[in-house]
Amino acid sequence: MINITFKQLRYVDALARHGHFGRAAEACAISQPALSMQIRELEEGLGTLLFERGARQVRLTSFGEAFVTRSRDILRAVDELGDLARAARAGLVGRLRIGIIPTVAPYLLPAVIGDLARSHGGLEISVRETQTPRLIQELTDGKLDTAIVALPVSEPSMAEVALFREDFVLVRPAADAGEPVPSPEVLREMRLLLLEEGHCFRDQALSFCGVNAARPRELLDGSTLSTLVQMVGAGVGVTLIPDMAVAVETRSAPVAVARFGEPRPSRTIGMIWRATSPLARQLGEIAAVVRQSAETMRRIHAGLRDVGPEQGSLRTAP
Image (cartoon, rainbow, N blue to C red; front, top):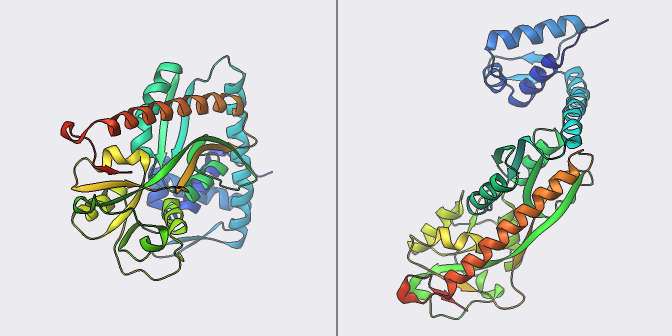
């Protein structure tokens, strides 16, 4: 009988993800020789190789691919046993692993972390910020408990709960503040700056403007909303950003914010988690806290917009 340990399964999973012994060892917080030895012992017990070792890269063998698929199911099931025990307690305590997309994280997280600390004092919150496809994969693999993303994700294995809807606004140079707000047809002919490929917000902005995402673009695509706004302030073009980002991103750039007429471009932000998660009820409670945090932020930002220009408010156009 082959003696396979959970530790070995986790080491194999890490090496399969990173394709490099050094990076996999670092992710597992062990030395590279120790990780290599554990995997070699497992391969000897199995009687076949899991990995092809190259000079610069490590690849799974065909058997290794099948092995990793099964082992991830096992690791996920073991993780859910721990979640089952947490769900049986009176309240949610311990580590909560939250994923969040980059176009939400800097603006919503500070309020959410503070509100969760007050409402769920026993939680140790761990945050992972990355794009939606990676968050879905890490949820599937049991590396995250929940994620805050733009809905829908249309993944049958995921439960979705809507949190709030927010509009997109146009950011343009301050000198254009008095100009009419462009229609989507006019906007797509302007020098529109967007986030780089992979961000769902990019696709949503392109959809509003009626631009084919596959169409070649000559202008700079930024990695952050901050970069886009600063480029607009430098006179390079215009951009769209979500409403929650306005207060943070426009305070240090010479730009004007314009709000579109109906139908306004918008997105729905929500929370997702594995449909099989034993923590579903507790995560629903967390979603309620996040929803309230977002509503409090919305009221604060609405109050800032009502302040007159002489008091340092954002320059906006209706």
